[in-house]
Length: 163
Image (cartoon, rainbow, N blue to C red):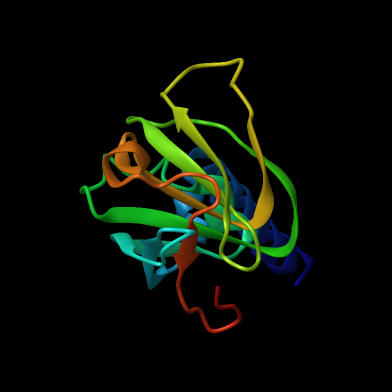
């Protein structure tokens, strides 16, 4: 009986270790599907529409850690919207990225507070800092092409939040 119990425990431990190694090698295994949101950029002064993006929503730590690093590229009208529980100062890096991005920081009311152009890089990573509760990552040059700058607004609806 003791041998059987020991064998079962050994198998459980081995499976746990294999799972941990697999997740460490590919963190996307932790992530189920993404919700999506339509994000509209509007001029902060006139309210005129500037652009629209279909964004995957990264609303949990695992999704935020992986971000777009498991993605080969984005179409011109695609992005990822990072949702933080609280407004604050955040820093984003281009860890394991294959393509350049615009990183757009957004206040709780939807106002764009900062726009960075970020290129793929290796360590040490540049820390792109900004304040807000949301961050929109889009293909590099999207902000310039569409005239999106600090003071403009992003409008979107999520289950927990809306701007």
